[in-house]
Image (cartoon, rainbow, N blue to C red):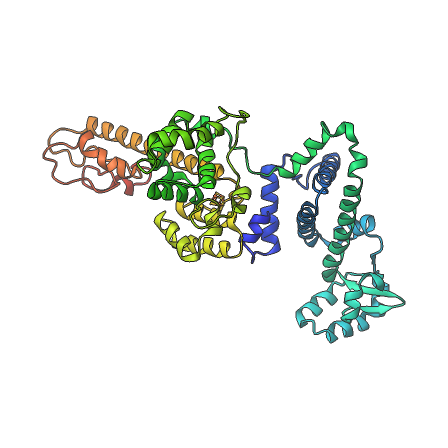
Length: 495
Ligand code: SF4
C-alpha cells in the first residue's frame, strides 16, 4: 500500500481504498467481510483484526524506526476507512472509541446555526462547502482544549468551553487522537518488552516476534533455483540480458569488460548466481573464464576459488549464504572502481537513462524510474523499469530482491512462450485440417491459419497445406472461403 501511494501520489482516497481492499482480499484471508455477512462473522473478523493489530504492535514496538513506520501505516489505513464512513457509522464509532466527541442534536444546532454560519463564512470556506454543510448538518462538540489549532485559527464556534466541529473537519482530529493512542501503546509496549519476554522466552517467542517485522508480502524466492534448472556458465550471458535486474546486469557487464570485479561486486553477483541455481562447479568455471586472461589459472585458484566455494558452504564455517535483498544492496556504498550496490542509487541520471535504454525499456517508464530514483525510491524505480522492460501493468509491490525480479521475469517469459506455442499448435492443426479439406491443385488459400493464430500460423501455412499452383496467397490472419470472402466476416466462422 505504501508503495502504491508513493507511485500514485495524486490518487483520490476512494481509489486508494479500492486498492487497499484489493490487497487485503489478495493477501489476508477472510479480511473482507461482505456487508451481508452475519453478525457473528463480522464480530469474528473484527476480533481477528484486533488480534493482528496487537501482534503487529508487539513486532513493531522494538525500535524507533519500526514504531514510526507502523504508526504511519496504521494511521493511513484508519484515515482511509474513517473518511468513508456514513454519519451513522461515525456516531457509532465515536460513541465507543472517542466519547469526548458528542453529537449535537438538531434542537441544539438550530440554536447556534447562525453563529456557525458566520464562523464558516469568516474563515472563507467556499460557498459550496457552506451550503453542503448547512443543508445536512452533522456537528460534534468537544472540549475546546482538544482542538487548540482550530481554535487558534478561529475555525470553530466556541460556546461554554465547547468547540462545534463539523463532520468534514472531524476526520483529522480523530486520526490525531488515534495516532496519539497507538503511539503511546507502542511506547508502553517497548518499555515493557523485557518484562513481557523474560529470559526464558528469549529462545522461543522473541525470534518469532522479531521475524514478523522482517516479513513482507513478497514471497520467498529461495525455491527459484530448483524451479528453473537451466542455469549454467554458458547460459548466463543470455539470462542476464533477459532476466537480470539492473544491479546484476550492470555487474555482469563490468565483469565482462574489465575481466575483474572487486570483492563487493563478486559477493553481490556470486550469491545471486548461486540463488538462481548456478551450481558451484559452473560458478568456478564462469568466474575463471571471465577473469581470464587477466588472471591466470593458478592465481585464480589461489586468490578467488576459495571464496566461491566458501559462498556455497564448502569451506570455513560451511554456512549456506543467501543472496542479498534490495534493502541490503541499496545501502552498499563503494569507491571508484566498485560496481556493486543499486544502480538506481549509484548511477547518475544520464547513465541510468542509457542503461535502461539499452534494456529497451519504454521511454515513459524510463522517465518514471529516473524520477523515482531522484526522490530516493530506488525499489519503486526498479519496479517501473521492470514494467517498462517487460511491458506489464503496474506491480502490486515494489521490487524487494533481485531474485524476485529474476523470478517474475522468468515467469512472464515462460507464460508468453507457452501462449505462443499454443498459438503455433492451433495454427498447425488448422493448417492440417485445411490441407485435408483442400481439393488439390487450385484449392484457394487451403491451409491458411485461422484468424488470430498469429505469425506462427502464417509461417506454418505454406508447409501445412498450400497447394502448388494456388493462385493467390492467403490473406494474413484470415481463412478464405471458396469465393475468396474472408470466413471471418461471417458470424461464427473462422474459428
Ligand atoms: Fe537490484 Fe533491488 Fe536495486 Fe532493483 S532495486 S536494481 S533489484 S538492488
